[in-house]
Image 1 (cartoon, rainbow, N blue to C red):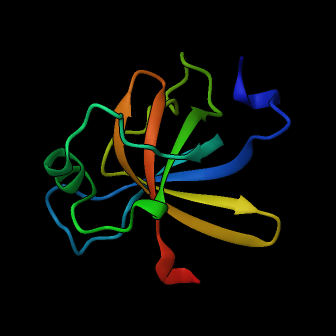
Image 2: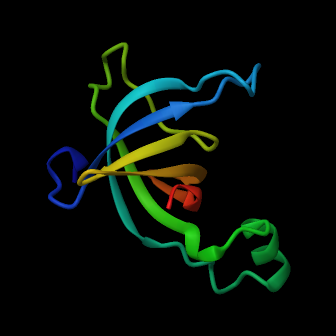
Length: 118
């Protein structure tokens, strides 16, 4: 199902850091819709070492599963697909929440919420 008409999907903007200049302003890729599907849960088959490596000293409560869909049509020059390393600014009412795209598997993403904004 497309997120464009999904009642629980939120508006967002996706940004990509400059690979060649970490101090440069991020490139705005464009608008998208995001559906945050809930907290990320590590697979049961992961051992303690795998979990520790994946979360890399970050609070596991900040990890979320989500789907992201670009607002632009696939055949337009403005279409993009979010990738690990991108940032997502999610509009929730009058509040903006920032997320880091940590991982991707097919159409699903693992995001880390930036708790520095609270």
